[in-house]
Length: 74
Length: 74
Image (cartoon, rainbow over all chains, first blue to last red; front, side, top):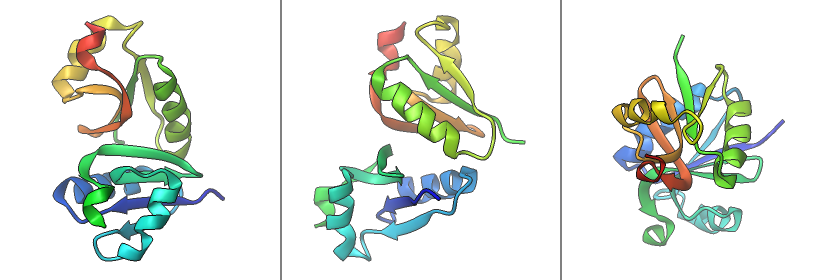
């Protein structure tokens, strides 16, 4: 089973994207709010995430629209 | 049933995104290659698409990563 993670930061762009995308995907999506779970910023970065909202499916990073750069969350 | 359209232009960024995203979604995805179906650029634009690859789910536009601006396809 593929692992799917949606990284966001609670911004309006993120929240709107999150709901529609998560509903449309077959597999369950782990949602990670980097504004709250700041300790996971490094994990996001190591996966190749540059900005949020971002969806990671099986190691493939998809930057969806643009809410905030990851650097703003450190 | 929601309508899902994936607009792309055949670029490497688009093709890679297309396969993973289309496989991960529950619903069937109509794939529109705007480089070939240039008459659909206006349709994409009217939906709010600014660049490709872009996924439109039920009227919500998600710009995924960045391949090309729509203006480059006119």
